[in-house]
Length: 271
Image (cartoon, rainbow, N blue to C red; front, top):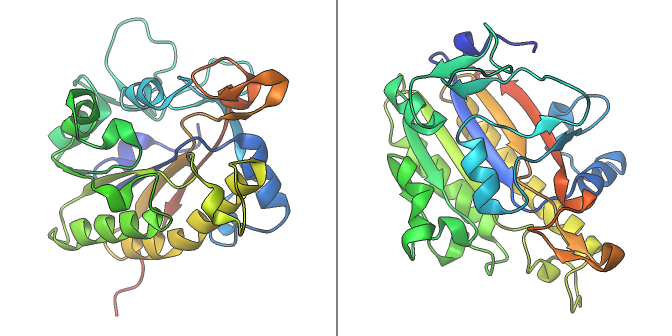
């Protein structure tokens, strides 16, 4: 663990972006091909880090994420965690881990003075029914409408708009925790390739290229407020016919291995 996360919390805004359903192999291939111009400057020289998801579908993975169980490095551990909620016997809490006396890190950050914002995407964030409200209800402010969901080809642009509008309304010294569940990569993603009739690995990658094109504005807007710690990762992958498997909520390697990155955006100079 390279950072003291106790020093990050309280001094930095925090941006968590989950690229819903993004596969590690596709993300890494696009990085190698130079097709992620916004993200590449922030990734290590080796590209995305391969990690194992804590859950094979959105609800399970995000419940774990919000408890401080981020995707685990795909190598023998134990691996220290940046954020955690206090409980006895944890072997992944170190002096550098920021620990909250709360049931989840969202409410833990709120207790430390953060304004917490959820910009929903896929159905588990759509606020249309009790389970669609469960994760958004952890946040002080949450947003969802059809423009942010999987059926709008420009969903990421709308999500970035909502996130920047929310943070622009805050006082400069109010720290923010902004969470965005990016829906664009989730099925259906065929509309990111011309004349594509069915979702496939190529349209999955094209969706990530679209998302990358929207993130520059998000990073620029967040860095205008304060230094910002960014966690960007997938919640799980998805299968496109490998060994007969389709979709996720299953135990295939393409579902369990996800891309992960974290970095700090320095605060932009005031003009």
